[in-house]
Image 1 (cartoon, rainbow, N blue to C red):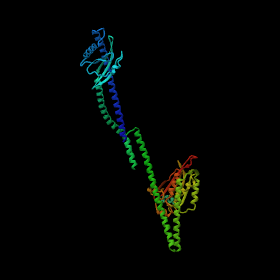
Image 2 (cartoon, rainbow, N blue to C red):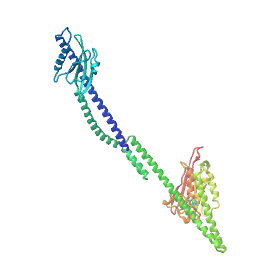
Image 3 (cartoon, protein in one colour):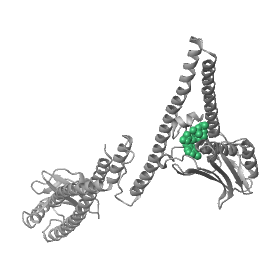
Image 4 (cartoon, helix red, strand yellow):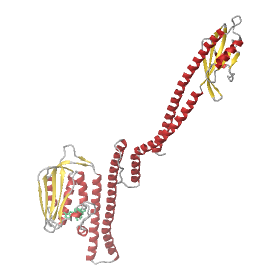
Amino acid sequence: MKFLNKILLWTVIIMAVAFGLSGYLFVDSVFRTSLEREVGKALDDSSILQFAFETAALNIPTKYNVLQDAAVEQIGSKLESSGQGSGRFLRLSNEEKKVLYASVGFPEDTSLLQQILENTRTWQVIPLGEHYYIHTGIMINTLDRNLYLETLEDVTEVFEERTQGFAVYRRVTLAMLLISTVVMFLICTWLTKPIRLLAQATRKMAAGDYSYRASQVSSDELGQLTMDFNSMANVLEGTIGELKEEVRAREDFIAAFAHELKTPLTAIIGYADLLRSRKLDEEKHFLSSNYIYTEGKRLENMSLRLLDIIVTKRERVELQPVETKIFSTYLEDMYAEHRQQELRFSFQEGTVWAEVNLLKSVLLNLVDNACKASREGGLVKVSGRKAAEGYCFQVEDQGVGIPQEELQKVTEAFYMVDKSRSRSRNGAGLGLALCAEILRLHGSELQIRSQVGQGTCISFVVPDRQEGNGVKEA
Ligand code: ATP
Ligand code: MG
């Protein structure tokens, strides 16, 4: 059953019980008051009759001062006819509770008669046909006789009023229930609107529409719930987007990896086949073996780089304060014999929080890239200086440059701007991806500025750290 219907049903049940019960209690209390009033009247009448009987008995001439049964009958008949309208209903009985006189139609039941005691007024309500009566009983002591006087007072009207009261209340209750059901339906529909909107949003999201948001229609707890739901949906959408992006990046990586494997393998297989199927002269034999060797080397280089990236991703590095002089000395030693380009090193003295070997690898990759991009005799400047947030390393060349639209992509694994040019220089497109991973561990990233035909400037800042705060999770 719907939540709205449940609220509606329970409200209607509670209202029906409340209306019914309050109506019953009200009509019943009015009835009891009227009945009490009628009982009082009937008892008063009975006392008046008792007095009238005693007065009449004193006025009747009696033998030996004893009231005869015939005289009782005579007084009873007189008292009966002296009543207003259709007269009174009364019954007179003697000491043995034997009826001496009774109005026509007076019930024969004597249960009340048996209960009458001296000086007490007894009463009960009895139904007779379609009528209700108050049946009273009282004792009369006159002229040495103890007689019993019973009367009947018609109170049918009080009972009819009660029946009418119930009928009116039933109709009022029904009308009120009908009106309140309609009103409650409108109120419940309005109150449960945020729930319906939330349910709709949940269904949309479950069906894959992560951008759908529930509209907020109130500022109460349900409005707050809608806001919280939407915030959760924002986070979910972001996370799902990131996951999709990651999956896409992985798929691209695998596709590129497969492609990069295929090229050297095709060359290796081709030349190996040539060597085994034909007898080649010495020069061709050397060339073929050399291709197999260089392509094999390229594969080895690629697998080592990949391994580096994977290890770096998982690594937990211990950052140490390192003198920047170490890096300049290292690079100068590495490129001491390098003659194709002119290399200029200038490092300001300072300390950086780093893992020495990983940072050396970054600088080596950047200088290697700069040399590969530069023409014969081109200038490559490698420098280091203190910056506001840490220590800034920079590698600048005057080489071929990178187009603006490619700047974002060069740090992706296997990405090469000019594939044939990079491959001819033994590149696999993994160097910058590795650099980015290493710098991430150092809390830094690559900044690349470049202009095609004029050169490239790649820099990064290793941030300053507090002593004893040098552990970085991958
Ligand atoms: P690897 O470093 O794995 O041997 P690679 O040098 O080709 O191969 P990356 O270092 O990742 O790969 O560089 C990616 C691509 O970015 C290069 O192929 C090149 O096209 C471009 N690139 C990088 N540095 C420069 C630079 N200084 N000038 C011009 N292009 C560059
Ligand atoms: Mg490289």
